[in-house]
Image 1 (cartoon, rainbow, N blue to C red):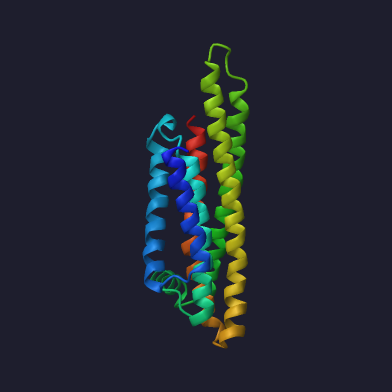
Image 2 (image 1 turned 90 degrees about the horizontal axis):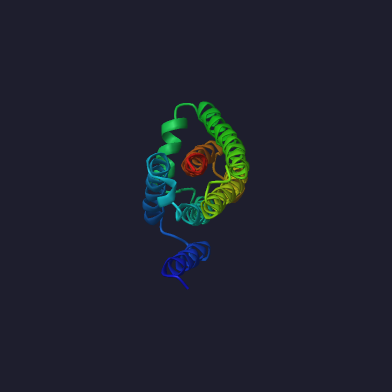
Length: 220
Protein backbone atom coordinates (compact mmCIF):
# COMPACT_ATOMS: atom_id res chain seq x y z
CA UNK A 1 0.00 0.00 0.00
CA UNK A 2 1.28 3.42 -0.91
CA UNK A 3 2.05 5.81 1.91
CA UNK A 4 -0.53 8.32 0.63
CA UNK A 5 -3.21 5.62 0.58
CA UNK A 6 -2.37 4.66 4.15
CA UNK A 7 -2.65 8.27 5.28
CA UNK A 8 -6.03 8.62 3.57
CA UNK A 9 -7.23 5.38 5.17
CA UNK A 10 -6.23 6.57 8.63
CA UNK A 11 -7.92 9.90 7.93
CA UNK A 12 -11.18 8.19 6.98
CA UNK A 13 -11.11 6.09 10.17
CA UNK A 14 -10.54 9.18 12.32
CA UNK A 15 -13.36 10.97 10.53
CA UNK A 16 -15.78 8.10 11.17
CA UNK A 17 -14.84 8.12 14.86
CA UNK A 18 -16.22 11.65 15.15
CA UNK A 19 -19.71 10.19 14.59
CA UNK A 20 -19.32 7.93 17.61
CA UNK A 21 -17.33 10.19 19.94
CA UNK A 22 -18.93 13.55 20.87
CA UNK A 23 -16.62 16.44 20.06
CA UNK A 24 -16.05 19.34 22.48
CA UNK A 25 -17.58 22.65 21.41
CA UNK A 26 -14.22 24.41 21.16
CA UNK A 27 -12.82 21.65 18.95
CA UNK A 28 -15.82 21.94 16.61
CA UNK A 29 -15.15 25.69 16.36
CA UNK A 30 -11.51 25.13 15.42
CA UNK A 31 -12.40 22.40 12.92
CA UNK A 32 -15.03 24.58 11.25
CA UNK A 33 -12.62 27.50 10.89
CA UNK A 34 -9.97 25.16 9.48
CA UNK A 35 -12.52 23.62 7.07
CA UNK A 36 -13.55 26.98 5.65
CA UNK A 37 -9.89 27.96 5.31
CA UNK A 38 -8.94 24.74 3.53
CA UNK A 39 -11.91 25.00 1.15
CA UNK A 40 -10.65 28.45 0.12
CA UNK A 41 -7.13 27.07 -0.37
CA UNK A 42 -8.47 24.25 -2.57
CA UNK A 43 -10.32 26.81 -4.69
CA UNK A 44 -7.17 28.92 -5.13
CA UNK A 45 -5.20 25.83 -6.14
CA UNK A 46 -7.76 24.99 -8.81
CA UNK A 47 -7.37 28.51 -10.20
CA UNK A 48 -3.60 28.80 -10.30
CA UNK A 49 -2.02 25.32 -10.18
CA UNK A 50 -1.61 23.12 -13.25
CA UNK A 51 -3.90 20.11 -13.29
CA UNK A 52 -0.89 17.81 -13.66
CA UNK A 53 0.18 18.81 -10.15
CA UNK A 54 -3.32 18.22 -8.75
CA UNK A 55 -3.72 14.49 -9.30
CA UNK A 56 -4.18 14.13 -5.54
CA UNK A 57 -6.98 16.70 -5.37
CA UNK A 58 -10.03 14.48 -6.11
CA UNK A 59 -9.17 12.06 -3.29
CA UNK A 60 -8.51 14.89 -0.84
CA UNK A 61 -11.76 16.66 -1.77
CA UNK A 62 -13.72 13.44 -1.31
CA UNK A 63 -12.23 12.84 2.14
CA UNK A 64 -12.72 16.51 3.00
CA UNK A 65 -16.41 16.34 2.04
CA UNK A 66 -16.81 13.20 4.13
CA UNK A 67 -15.15 15.03 7.02
CA UNK A 68 -17.61 17.92 6.66
CA UNK A 69 -20.52 15.48 6.63
CA UNK A 70 -19.45 13.80 9.85
CA UNK A 71 -18.66 17.17 11.43
CA UNK A 72 -22.19 18.31 10.60
CA UNK A 73 -23.56 15.30 12.48
CA UNK A 74 -21.46 16.26 15.52
CA UNK A 75 -22.71 19.86 15.33
CA UNK A 76 -26.36 18.81 15.10
CA UNK A 77 -25.92 16.43 18.03
CA UNK A 78 -24.45 19.28 20.08
CA UNK A 79 -27.32 21.61 19.14
CA UNK A 80 -29.99 19.07 20.08
CA UNK A 81 -28.23 18.22 23.34
CA UNK A 82 -27.59 21.73 24.62
CA UNK A 83 -29.15 24.31 22.30
CA UNK A 84 -25.65 25.62 21.58
CA UNK A 85 -23.31 24.89 18.70
CA UNK A 86 -20.21 26.89 19.49
CA UNK A 87 -19.03 30.36 18.58
CA UNK A 88 -18.64 29.87 14.81
CA UNK A 89 -22.18 28.68 14.08
CA UNK A 90 -23.61 31.10 16.65
CA UNK A 91 -21.71 34.05 15.17
CA UNK A 92 -22.86 33.29 11.62
CA UNK A 93 -26.47 32.92 12.78
CA UNK A 94 -26.47 36.11 14.84
CA UNK A 95 -24.66 38.13 12.20
CA UNK A 96 -27.12 37.20 9.46
CA UNK A 97 -30.39 36.74 11.34
CA UNK A 98 -30.23 38.33 14.79
CA UNK A 99 -32.07 41.53 13.79
CA UNK A 100 -34.43 39.84 11.35
CA UNK A 101 -34.61 36.01 11.32
CA UNK A 102 -36.81 36.08 8.21
CA UNK A 103 -34.13 38.00 6.31
CA UNK A 104 -31.59 35.49 7.58
CA UNK A 105 -33.69 32.62 6.27
CA UNK A 106 -33.97 34.34 2.89
CA UNK A 107 -30.17 34.67 2.73
CA UNK A 108 -29.82 31.00 3.67
CA UNK A 109 -32.29 29.98 0.94
CA UNK A 110 -30.35 32.12 -1.55
CA UNK A 111 -27.03 30.49 -0.60
CA UNK A 112 -28.66 27.05 -0.86
CA UNK A 113 -30.10 27.85 -4.29
CA UNK A 114 -26.75 29.17 -5.53
CA UNK A 115 -25.02 26.03 -4.23
CA UNK A 116 -27.31 23.73 -6.22
CA UNK A 117 -27.03 25.90 -9.33
CA UNK A 118 -23.24 25.71 -9.10
CA UNK A 119 -23.45 21.95 -8.56
CA UNK A 120 -25.56 21.49 -11.70
CA UNK A 121 -23.38 23.83 -13.79
CA UNK A 122 -20.18 22.14 -12.58
CA UNK A 123 -21.64 18.71 -13.32
CA UNK A 124 -22.48 19.80 -16.85
CA UNK A 125 -19.07 21.39 -17.37
CA UNK A 126 -17.15 18.32 -16.19
CA UNK A 127 -19.31 16.09 -18.40
CA UNK A 128 -18.58 18.32 -21.41
CA UNK A 129 -14.83 18.30 -20.73
CA UNK A 130 -14.83 14.51 -20.34
CA UNK A 131 -16.76 14.07 -23.59
CA UNK A 132 -14.38 16.45 -25.36
CA UNK A 133 -11.38 14.35 -24.37
CA UNK A 134 -12.69 11.48 -26.50
CA UNK A 135 -12.58 13.66 -29.62
CA UNK A 136 -8.99 14.83 -29.23
CA UNK A 137 -6.66 14.50 -32.18
CA UNK A 138 -4.95 11.20 -32.82
CA UNK A 139 -1.50 12.71 -32.25
CA UNK A 140 -2.32 13.30 -28.55
CA UNK A 141 -0.59 10.64 -26.43
CA UNK A 142 -3.08 7.99 -25.31
CA UNK A 143 -1.74 7.86 -21.76
CA UNK A 144 -2.27 11.62 -21.43
CA UNK A 145 -5.88 11.31 -22.57
CA UNK A 146 -6.45 8.46 -20.11
CA UNK A 147 -4.95 10.52 -17.26
CA UNK A 148 -7.09 13.55 -18.13
CA UNK A 149 -10.23 11.43 -18.41
CA UNK A 150 -9.57 9.75 -15.08
CA UNK A 151 -9.04 13.14 -13.43
CA UNK A 152 -12.32 14.50 -14.80
CA UNK A 153 -14.25 11.38 -13.84
CA UNK A 154 -12.84 11.63 -10.31
CA UNK A 155 -13.92 15.27 -10.10
CA UNK A 156 -17.38 14.29 -11.35
CA UNK A 157 -17.58 11.83 -8.46
CA UNK A 158 -16.58 14.56 -6.00
CA UNK A 159 -19.35 16.85 -7.29
CA UNK A 160 -21.97 14.11 -6.96
CA UNK A 161 -20.83 13.43 -3.39
CA UNK A 162 -20.91 17.16 -2.63
CA UNK A 163 -24.49 17.29 -3.93
CA UNK A 164 -25.48 14.51 -1.53
CA UNK A 165 -23.73 16.41 1.26
CA UNK A 166 -25.70 19.57 0.43
CA UNK A 167 -28.99 17.64 0.44
CA UNK A 168 -28.13 16.12 3.83
CA UNK A 169 -27.55 19.60 5.24
CA UNK A 170 -31.03 20.71 4.16
CA UNK A 171 -32.45 17.74 6.06
CA UNK A 172 -30.32 18.68 9.07
CA UNK A 173 -31.83 22.18 9.06
CA UNK A 174 -35.31 20.77 9.60
CA UNK A 175 -34.00 18.42 12.28
CA UNK A 176 -32.41 21.35 14.13
CA UNK A 177 -35.59 23.45 14.19
CA UNK A 178 -38.19 20.73 14.74
CA UNK A 179 -36.04 18.48 16.93
CA UNK A 180 -34.66 21.35 18.98
CA UNK A 181 -38.09 22.72 19.87
CA UNK A 182 -39.45 19.23 20.60
CA UNK A 183 -36.50 18.06 22.72
CA UNK A 184 -35.44 21.21 24.55
CA UNK A 185 -38.74 23.08 24.44
CA UNK A 186 -37.13 26.44 23.73
CA UNK A 187 -38.54 29.16 21.46
CA UNK A 188 -38.41 28.39 17.76
CA UNK A 189 -36.51 31.65 17.15
CA UNK A 190 -33.49 30.27 19.01
CA UNK A 191 -33.24 27.27 16.73
CA UNK A 192 -33.97 29.32 13.63
CA UNK A 193 -30.81 31.33 14.34
CA UNK A 194 -28.86 28.12 14.97
CA UNK A 195 -30.21 26.64 11.73
CA UNK A 196 -29.21 29.77 9.79
CA UNK A 197 -25.69 29.68 11.24
CA UNK A 198 -25.39 25.94 10.68
CA UNK A 199 -26.63 26.17 7.10
CA UNK A 200 -24.21 28.93 6.13
CA UNK A 201 -21.21 27.34 7.84
CA UNK A 202 -21.73 23.96 6.20
CA UNK A 203 -23.06 25.02 2.78
CA UNK A 204 -20.25 27.48 2.02
CA UNK A 205 -17.58 24.69 1.95
CA UNK A 206 -19.90 22.60 -0.27
CA UNK A 207 -20.17 25.53 -2.67
CA UNK A 208 -16.40 26.05 -2.71
CA UNK A 209 -15.69 22.32 -3.15
CA UNK A 210 -18.01 22.18 -6.15
CA UNK A 211 -16.42 25.29 -7.67
CA UNK A 212 -12.99 23.77 -7.11
CA UNK A 213 -13.96 20.54 -8.86
CA UNK A 214 -15.50 22.28 -11.85
CA UNK A 215 -12.64 24.74 -12.29
CA UNK A 216 -9.94 22.09 -11.92
CA UNK A 217 -11.60 19.84 -14.50
CA UNK A 218 -12.13 22.73 -16.93
CA UNK A 219 -8.39 23.43 -16.97
CA UNK A 220 -7.50 19.94 -18.20
